[in-house]
Length: 138
Length: 126
Image 1 (spheres, rainbow over the protein chains, first blue to last red):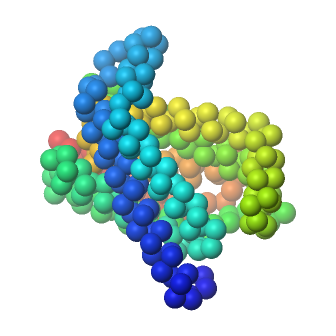
Image 2: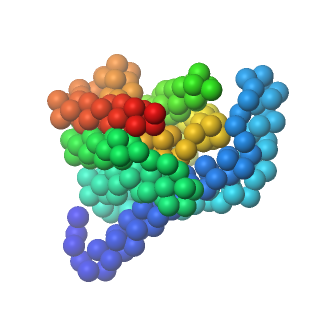
């Protein structure tokens, strides 16, 4: 990646947006669904009403908007930065989601759960550092 | 409850991964993007939308999002999101079978770590 200060600054800003808006979107979706309550039926009509209720919630739409911001930032940064440079930010998102759930939604997370999240981040990081092309170019 | 929880998690992992594989197949059939001008990108999107696999992929990914909402109605976000990392295992399997890609040992090692991490999250949930 070209390392001009302007481009580097722009990249950091977009990576920051990704790190904040992706996990925030997930946390908002959880909060929205918690307010709606657990799905209790498998009947198609029941599921339909459940999702209609979900999409009538302002918190759900805030979550979707936040995830859209994440996705736009992700797409924009990928137009100039290498995937292997961007990917660690999405790796950390698994940890940030757990941290935000613990902080803002008061979710109980055991030490073993934290360890699992850490190992997942490491695994995703390893996957992200493999060669992006596994087939011969045609 | 456990049945519903497992069903939604599988729905997200299988549906989301299948959707991504279909989109990947569609994009590969179109070819690499070399021109990033807005008009060229619009033409590229137009070509992508004419590929059947793109529509199948987008539909599957939308269904996976519904599954994600269902799972979040039952479980904490700090549990659901890390578990969805199992999609890395599903995509490694799927890309070998469905797209004919060669999955490297390093990628399998990463997938193995993800599986260990998800197992710890499940056990840690209690």
